[in-house]
Amino acid sequence: MISAIDAIVETSIDSTGPGIAVAVAQDGNCLHCKGYGFANLEWSNPVTTDTVFRLASLTKPFTATAVLLLEQEGRLRLSDPIARYVPDAPEDWHAITIEHLLTHTSGLKDYKNLDGFIRIWSRADLSPRELMTLFADLPLDFEPGARFSYTSSNYVLLGLLIEIISGVSYSEFIYRHIFTPLGMNNSHYMLQGIIIPRRAAGYVRVHQGYQIAPFRSVTTAYASGGLGSTVEDMLTWDRALRTHHLLSKETQERVFTPPILANGQTSIYGLGWYVENLQGHRVAYHPGDVEGFSALMAQFLDIPVTIVLLANVSHFDVQNLAMQISQVVL
Image (tube, rainbow, N blue to C red):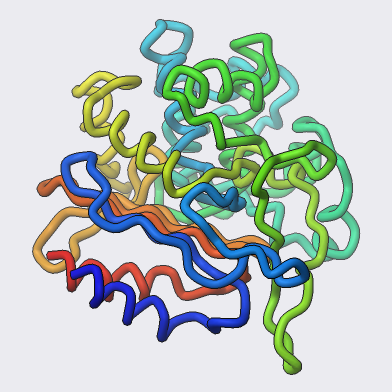
């Protein structure tokens, strides 16, 4: 199996280019954990299992867990309207519940798709409320609960909700209640100015090969995409989910149960995770992609197998690679 995975990964990357860290676990134990390619092309540092990558949207399951921890403490209910906690919320938002935000069924427009976002805002250091103002006055795309539409605006509001209820910053809450208790010592809120040991450099493909990815402020990703981690720490996270170390078994089952939409169909997104079928198995997964980094975690729900892929190049087809690896493992 290991040699087959090696062959699959090695044909998917440029041996002299940016790399990828791969982890395959069963019953919480690493079957195959390895780095391929380079974490830094200028210094030729190889990717290892403790190389730190940006998680991009793979941040969202952590944000969802933080909200559910507050629910377990009795400090909110998922049926609560977000306007109860954000007093200056627009009138259109009064029908949006916390669950709508978690499941991407709110109808909010995605601030990252706004004209001029990349050119004007993506390099700025914005507060959560400044991020909120980018989409607060925009009309909803549909009535809350009517359908699924993935938008990072939902998770910006969830990050703000966490701060309002807990009284600490989003990053501080994640460190206090998830990273530190689990011993995820190589996981971080990926601010540009702080020293993060073994942080991978991010790259984009160009005609001549590769170049350093354009700078994108972590504060504009915030609770929708601001975290970073290693495959080793992500396996620690996997074990915590499977053993209900943070969330109760009942809550965890709700996490992986997508809602019924207004048209009667079941959505494909639960509380922070996509949930679909793969080769006859239910799989909870989440991809991530930001300038310079690609990520994916897939947790099989009916068998104790997990796959984590973290790469330091944009638009790496992590879903296809995970599919190939899963065929070998299963």
